[in-house]
Image (cartoon, rainbow, N blue to C red):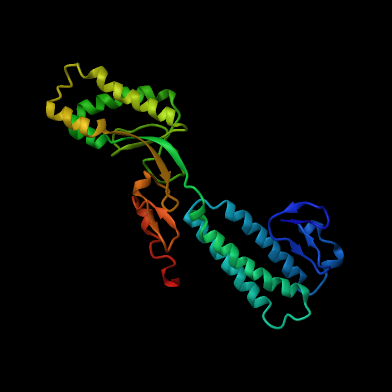
Length: 275
């Protein structure tokens, strides 16, 4: 941590080093007498770029975000290496740019390892496997369970994350899906919705249309009535939501990914030529 020589603000990030050998928190605090020097414009522009990168690292949410920022850092480093190539003796700001190239390397490593040091987003969820339910108790019976359950869900707020794309939020359930993945704000809501789902079976088991055999009841019980109340984690590669046990660590990518969706395979060989 350092103190700005002008406004006395304390900051942790890289300071603006000026030709008067003092440190400043921003370009606004830099005195005019230090600005009009050889390579000063290039230096201050690079400092602004570093500050932007520091903010962008904090906003990385996906592997694509990370790759874009890594490319930006590499391009910035290359362009400034070319810009200041040659003798830097006696030129204060040219020397400072050389030092900042090391900072860019540090920021690249920080961005590259971001998913090793941040928690993956997770949410309490209810997963209902309609396909297995149809197979075990039949299409008609499963449809009846679905209709009753759907009516009870109307008072709840949730996102159905069965599909991975995020441009559109599904806030309903669909009997034609292989399964529904209902993401709730709290585990309490998820457990209560799971209870409502199971109550459907108790309500209609004695109705004539069900006619379940002992074998069907045993399989239904074995599959826990085709419902799971579980915490799902957000895959930073494909955008899907999956149980943590489906995630695998990839050392070349420095992250965990679920490999459950097509988008997860796109970057499997990224960085491997660098090792």
